[in-house]
Image (tube, rainbow, N blue to C red; front, side, top):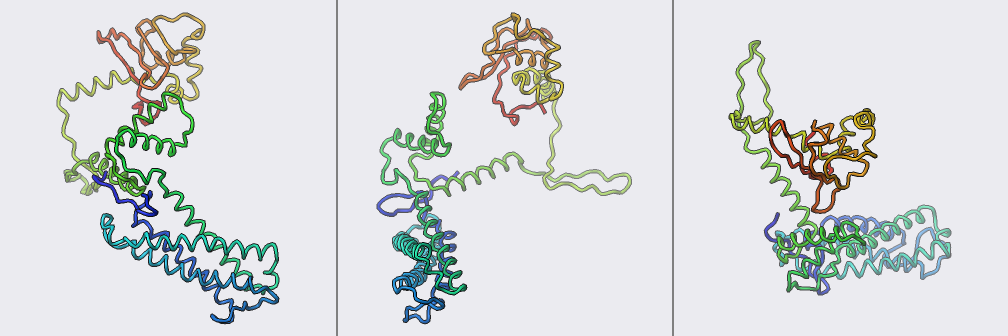
Length: 390
């Protein structure tokens, strides 16, 4: 992750969830669409001074002036978006002074976006309800339709982007850690689309918010910070997992064939006797923690024969009394599947909890007479990625 965070955009006296260097893609897209729209609109007039539409007969002068205003406004807006894109590329992410004019240009582009939306609505009213486009030629009608679509798209895109970048707490300075934690908790709820939650989920949101609030320590964050940090963190984890690669050499084959070695191949040291005993011990005890996954894992491993096998092993598992203490067992399918996988008898399982709650995972305590030991097996999650059965 970054040690610091990218400075947010300062506009309208508050901070926004974007940086001044994030306007390049949207500005170039708006510049391209508005340039095409301006060309399509202004070419429908006889001249730049004379406001008269070609191929249009008996249309009101107000309609012609609105269409002409859209063309002029598109030309000016396209230049403003182009200037925004150019200035947004200047400097490094932390050299905000080189992009200080982005906020000024944003005032003008926002004003033109709202004005363009109003003018396009008026022209659409003339075209649809008053049917003025029927008095124009086919080419003029199609070009003006395309121009209206481009203008609506750019205006709505601009307004929608500002709504996404709006930070409700952007005008605040964090004076206490509690307020910063509450802000992160609200962000988690928004990202998870969680309006109503139980007490357990409330504790999860609070713990996650406290962790991130302590990590970022009041820094202002924009979405590009989070995405870039996740990419860098993934790359660091991948490098740590692969480790330093060593060159490998194989002895020449008898038939003279030359082996091809993968670039990701690495040399593993020979295990010592203690490490081998540890591996064998893990292999032996793996069936006990695999058994904590109960009926779900057994059904996944034996999809077609799981139910008949469990019923044949204990036909009365739902209605008879079981040895030991079993909480949350329900119909005792998890217990029967666990005994099938770990090879223990029912009397060997002393205590078990088969109901998974927050901070109270599934576990059981069993006596293994073969090793003269007591095993406490705890389940992590129900994700198959966490299950080492493969």
